[in-house]
Structures are given as structure tokens and as C-alpha cells.
Amino acid sequence: MLFIANAEGWPGIPTTIEMLRSGSDSLTAMVAGISKVEAETKVRSVGHGGWPNMLGVMECDAAVMDGTTREVGSVGAVPDTIPVARLAHEVMKQLPHVMLTGAGARRFATETGFSVDDVLLEDSKRVWWERLEQEMTPEQKAAFPNTPLAPLLKTITDPERVRDTTVYLSADPARGIHAATSTSGWAWKYPGRLGDSPIPGAGFYADSRYGAAACTHTGEMTMRCATSRTIVLAMKLGYSLSDAVKLAVDELSELTDGFLGGVVIHAVDAKGNHEVFNFRCQGEIRYWLWDDSMPEAELRAAKTI
Ligand code: GLY
Figure 1 (cartoon, rainbow, N blue to C red):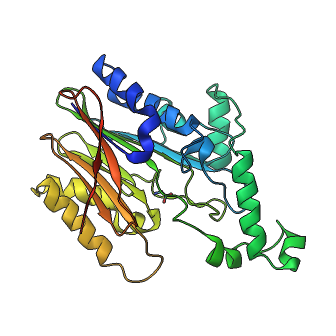
Figure 2: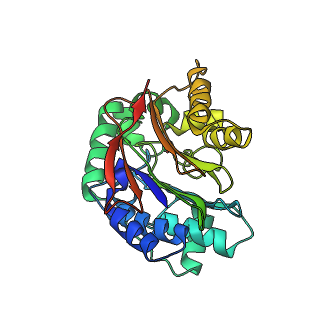
């Protein structure tokens, strides 16, 4: 049994490992762990501790993928809900759909018994408004929110403030290979913007026969390259895990126009190998690794070019 998570995933790791050790279904164990990350206000990129969109509204994205059945549950731009990975899991378990967004996702949350949460922290609200105020002319400020947001987006969007997303991957010969993600997305994003975390093939993909991948940071890059699916498909076509990740990194490097930023790729294969690769993110990127021979998860440094 192998489990990896990005550094921001720390609040839920003991829960996930404990549940995996005691034989839990892998997705249930990872969703329970991610629920702790989403509730932890010290994690400033996911759930309650995350950053709002340009209107000061929290819109969270999350997904789960069962690599054995290749079933997916996904939610995007969900308001008023902290445990969105659990909501994505319910979409997978209960609905004939793969993805719900916005008001529809919140309606399903209410039908399924989720509370209506006040997701935006007072501190995030203060920082959101202070930054927005700096960018607006007096006319824009007087008209806000009835002012075009797109011109503001050019200067205010701050993907570096979102240092991470939460991604969890597990691989076990008996229980299969699975992926789960959760994020509040870019700080000051345009309302309704989805990142890669709810998009199968971009922010995550899992196939128990070959492996799984999940990405953090600039979703606008991995959505253009279908990075997670590329890695798993390359392994299906006979690439080793490290060659599959290299192929995906080469594809990201080929992008020269549009919004460009860093990406961190997390990947596992069905032979018990893993790779975490930092493509152009600033600073050292670390991740958590646990296998069932280890007493607890260890923090490791990602590879880079
Ligand atoms: N990777 C997270 C996002 O782009 O929202």
C-alpha cells in the first residue's frame, strides 16, 4: 500500500493512514483525510482557509476517481460548502452524472444532508477587499460589484497566493489505485472559474491497471495538456512512470502562449513506484509519502529540472 499527498495535505494524513491501515475503502479514507484539510484554517488554499473569488465569494472545487471502475465524482465552484471532496464522493456514489457545479452542486449538498457553511474567514475577507481596493479606480469602487471584472483580473489574479491544492493518491494491489482532490482555486479568480482539480484527465486521473496522477498549482496549464490523463495513458502504452512524467513535463514546456505558470505533478504506478515533479514552481516543493512498512508519513522533496 502506497499513499502520497502534497505538503498542504498534512491535517488529514494521520486520519487517512489510520483508515487505510484498518482496511477502509481507499477513497473513503482519502476523503475523510481531505475533509480535515478543508476544515483546517491554517491551510490557505483549500476549503475554509482558502481565498475567495473577485466578488469575495468562496467557490470550491473537488473530485474523486476510483481507478478500478474509472468512476468519477466532481464538483466545481460550489458555494457555502466546506467538505467538497465528500460532496464529490456523494456525486460519484449517488448520481448518474460525473460533475455538478455552482447552485446545482449546492442544491445536491442540501438534499444529501450537508450543512450550509460560512466558508469565508474574516481574515480572508479583509485581505480580499484590501487587495481589490488597491486595484480599483474610485469609479470602479463606487460601482462595485456592478463593474466589469475582466479588466481587474489582469492585475489582481494571484495564482502564486494559491501555493497548492490538496491531492491524495493511493495505490494498493488489493484495493486499487485512486485519486482525490480539493481546492478553493486561484485567489481573486473570475466568478465561475474552474481549475483543474475537478476536471478528470487534467487535475487527476486513475486507472488501477497502470497508475494515477494528480496536479497542483496552475490548472490553466494542465487543462490545456490533459496532464494527468497523459501520464496514465503513457503508462498504458508501455512508458515507465518516470518517462510518462517526463512526457507530460515536455508537453507543459511546449506551451509558449496564454497564461503560463508552475505545476507540480504527483504520480504513482501499479508497481509501487511514485514520482513528484516540480515544473517551474518557485521554492522547494515537498510532499508526503507513506507505505505500509513506515510507521508514519515522511515529508520528501519533489524532483525538479
Ligand atoms: N490546481 C488548482 C487550480 O488551478 O485551481
